[in-house]
Image (cartoon, rainbow, N blue to C red; front, side, top):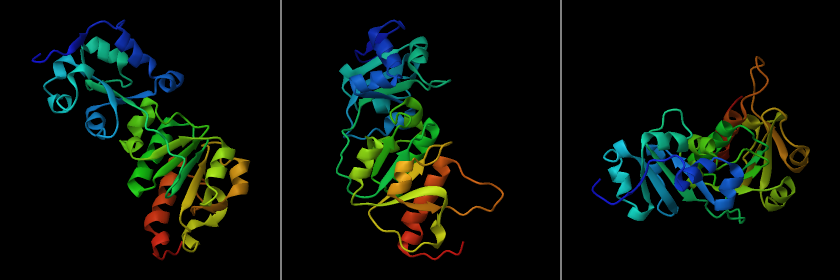
Length: 261
């Protein structure tokens, strides 16, 4: 090693144990940190996000030198394959892992909002965050959901976690924050989104729990809308429904396109 990086070869090392414990939701909140794993994710950490540590597998230093050179030497740790395996949340670690501080959430909801009303699957959660970033939906409110900073959600968001203002709220708090937004709630028995007039902005688009659907609070608080079905199946996956509806609202009928569904 050309530089004086700190070397970790024991799985009992406090740094390694700290990373392992960051897989727990309560521990993440306590230390205000979460894990970002994988070359594509680590290299795309924005400059305004504070990196607290960077761990690189010893035999991968040359591969990731272009990432390592961006950061303070004091924040970089070199580990052996055994330690990386313990810290990693993936079956086959790629050899680079970072920790970053949470972004400070902003309760001033300028722009449109995605509301996740009890989404429990990390893959769905991460996909919706990714779709928000792709559609320019600036804010997301999570209510009794999977933790948006869990390693699985962070990976599924494909960097979207850094681009969306994520707030964790109760249902009553969320409804209060959305007082100036038009609320649209996805449900099987709502008005066909493809036959609606122009969507009011700023809007909040709500999707319910994968098995239970919308909570009663949001059934009462919003306009119920639905996606048309062929009749061969009754519903779509929560992340798929949210993504289709969001794209239609942002890039379809919301911009004046005509659909006959």
